[in-house]
Amino acid sequence: MGNTQLGKDLIAMLGKDKVLTDDLDLMYYSYDSSFLARNRKFMPDAVVTPRSTEEVAQIMRFAFTNNIPVTPRGAGTGETCGAVPAKGGIVLDLSTWNTIEEIDIANMQAIVRPGVIHDELNQELAKHGLFFPPDPGSTRMCTLGGMVANNSSGLRAVKYGTTEQYVLGLEVVLPDGRVITTGGMKAKAIKNVSGMNLTKLFVGSEGTLGVITKIRLRVWPKPKARGILMAVFSDLEQAPAAVLDVYQDGILPSGIEILDESAIKAVNMYKPEIALPDAQAILLFELDGNPASVEYEGNRLVEIVGKRASHVEWSTEPKRMAQLWQGRSVVATAAARVREDGSRIFAGEDISVPLSRVTEALKKIRAVAQKYGIGVVNYGHIGDGNVHTAPVIDPENPAEIAQANKLVDEIHRLAVDLEGSTTGEHGVGLVRAPYARLEHGEAVNIMAAIKRALDPKGIMNPGKLFLTEEEADNVSPTSGSSRSA
Image 1 (cartoon, helix red, strand yellow):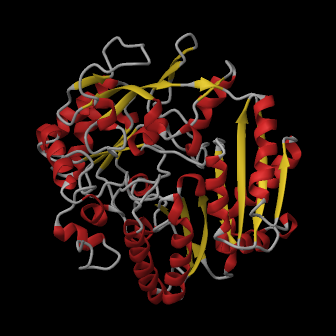
Image 2 (cartoon, helix red, strand yellow; image 1 turned 135 degrees about the vertical axis):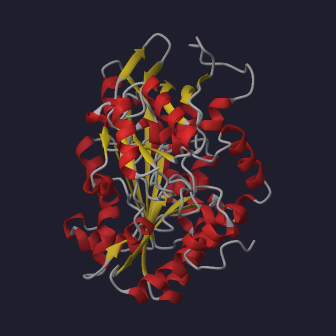
């Protein structure tokens, strides 16, 4: 089917105002924040902006009949090429379908459409003393549909978990246009063990099984108090040990963040006024809850962490908490400042390892970075072992790109070797797909079988998660080595 005919057919179906086919418009949907998308473009043939379940179902029936690939997309904040059209076809832009359908205070639930921005939902929930706990760094941009599709999380996952724990049910349009409801047709109950858990199947499926058109979320009471403890470590190995000490004392902070010496240096170069102390690591513990418990646990943190840290400071005063958190809040931006002609690339940036092996991971990442001559800034959510690595290179230098690709490949393999995962929160997409078999083994075949059952023509976000050998080689950082286990 030609590009022009596809556009005409979609316009006839949805109207001119919901279909984009101009080259400049299509270019906007051809990339995300990933380094892979910077170096390659994945152009769609058309973009549509449906605003109802029936419109999505119409599009899917049309695509199924005509074997046209369809890629759902939210705000495009992804960093793994998860929502770029690897095989062309139609991009479903769901970001404009942003209605909060219901906030059910009595049942502690919210029903939303996929394009609702995370921060906007929490602003509405706050009016009722509620909140949706998962907290991605892109809170002011990312959509809830994308969060569900990628099972997103953030720095408070250590206490509150990831998105999957809050999804009670979904409305999904299948690749052939059928519409299903998971979690029960009329369900409002929080507990439900009836039947197979199809909700869990679609959460984290990255748009490869169907289009999420409605989400029923569990929400929680908003904590009334918060406190921050900053701890400075002259010995990197003492930092994870301090985290374990805190857990063993029965305290579960809402977040525990780490900046290693590379991140401390980057922050101080970017904003010297923050003046983080020179150290091998800084930890930030966040507590939340009722005021009395926060104060008690904060004082316990001072005692426990102070045994291993060279300096600790605890505060519940808002202005001081913001100052203590300032270094963590700017580190992602600061990373690129470690080199005047460098740019931070999003590649190999969110591996996840067991807490007991965080120190080992950081040391090995430093060694690999030195091996390839690439500067890497390390920080992340140490509370759940989610380490962010930020390579900084000259992205116009082919030799540096080649070295960076080797570095990223080793970081991904290191994560698996350390009993971790290639991704703790950013997803697989196209970028991590070459490592699927290394990470999951035979389970990949079961995943592929599930996809074939729901998507027999393979039109739903094709070219992701399950790649042919040729496809894997095509996107692997080091061609030809991607499938070795």
